[in-house]
Length: 292
Length: 157
Image 1: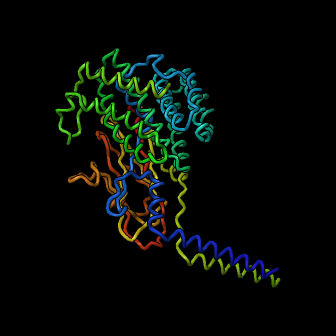
Image 2: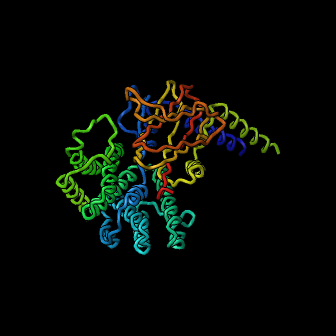
Image 3: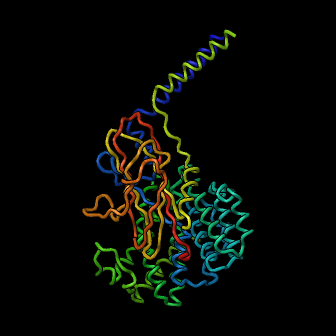
């Protein structure tokens, strides 16, 4: 009896040692893990001694920037919460529209449209649950706190930021960072869609500057999506969509004559009506396709 | 009684053997680390976070993260190195590591290893590059992780 227990313990110890030695062994396995953990993109140089990754902002920040530049609230522009039933196809569609609704939530919140915000929080929670992010809303009773703090704009925005942080953590823990990149692409398209629609009617110059600023992060979104292309093949189509908007912007006269090596001051750049209309049309077309 | 002595001796011997085999890796509890880092963002609002696994290799490794920012906004970047077994070099530049000429905006060079959390504030930038230079070490060296978190100002508060 004692002998068999003794053997079991030694066997257990041996298994642990073998497993541990395996984890210390080949460098290639170690670097693959690093690639997975950090969404590493292609720029690895000189035998993986250099790695590059991209960090994207939150949908709340995008909405906050537009709000600061004077983005007015126009009802009916945002995607209707009723459309949520359409987004059950796959996780790519869910993530993309979670991004769209996250922007709509922030847009209504920053414009103190609290009843609408409640509806957008509900659909964000619904899609998040389908994506396995239910815990993000349950941690510290965030969803309940949102309802209790209705009307207190600052508290509500802090709660949204907290939900974003919880979602980011869950996605990272479960190696699902590709969904974060897809969701951000959805949020980005929705925010430039809303801004371009509002600008088309009020011609607020500050809003146009903020809109052009958004194009400066388009390449970062593409990098983040490409890093995850293996996990989410539809990322390629999304990259094409972003590129089609970006190339229209880059082909505008003011951008073409600017020095590509310098960071542009968009407050000194003006798009012609024709250039803006082409951009608006393209953004509208892609956004319609996302929410259909 | 004799049974227990034999069992205990075997258990202790096994664990001693295992503990000599290699240094344990520092636990990287991403939730706890990020929650703590967030407290250093105040009064800024959480925007994004990046956790990077650090494994020491025979050669120096550089890991770079491009952080997308917007001109006209103010940001705070908070670092937490408490899950690192030894100091790594943390630098923030205005351009990527392949740029011919780039400006160093921040460095942890003069921050003692004992200070595990530190912050950096920046405005009027469209992007920054956070570089971690992981020194060469014996492959049995413990691994760890490092976090940085970006905070922004809602409504210019």
